[in-house]
Image 1 (tube, rainbow, N blue to C red):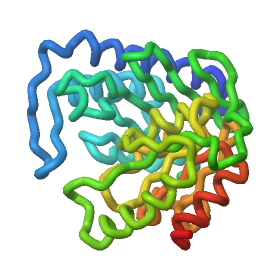
Image 2: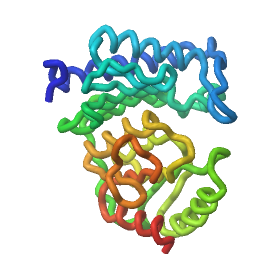
Image 3: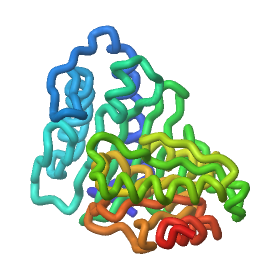
Image 4: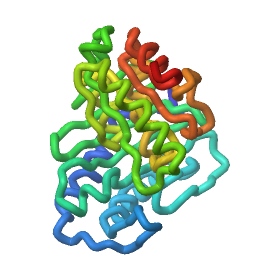
Length: 273
């Protein structure tokens, strides 16, 4: 596969270096962090988000001036291209400002809406998770795959807990399903960090992650991780078991290692039994 007559592998390497540069900046600039925007009652932006975004924009526009860019802070820069770069300059801003080491930065490349390359950098663990269509998944440059665990009773899963944006109806639905799931898995943890958790699935560390839909994450919070899981041999669907299309996360996301565990979790979430 090529993009602008360049092999996808070369672009993946370039992207990994770019994401590491942005990640290093985020870490080194923490002392200069200031909140610059309250987007709503829950979401904020900082000068670090904006300056990290500028690192991406400058690099992408220099190397691929004809490509579209979709970024969390700047929105959509439309160049009428088949290619779109999707950027989250600081994934986990609320943790970052509280000095909690659960944040990162990520980049995704789409070809006519289909993800073909993604990179997520988790500075606190010095880990770069990356994938390219047809090339597989890599952790710090080493090819890795999902694990083969197929028994739900031995699975460690994570789920995205509800928050103040969650509707009363969805809140009740989530807490009706979670106790059933908790009784059937080895361990369950609640944490809203889709890209990192998908990276863990792809690296074989955990078996599944559940996002219930309509409670916060945007496309850039999830899409890089989806490609990683798929390229590592795992499976990603919505909570009805259908493929995720057109950047639509309204029906939730289930990412797993692709074994019987996927079917078992779907059954619980769909039927509550």
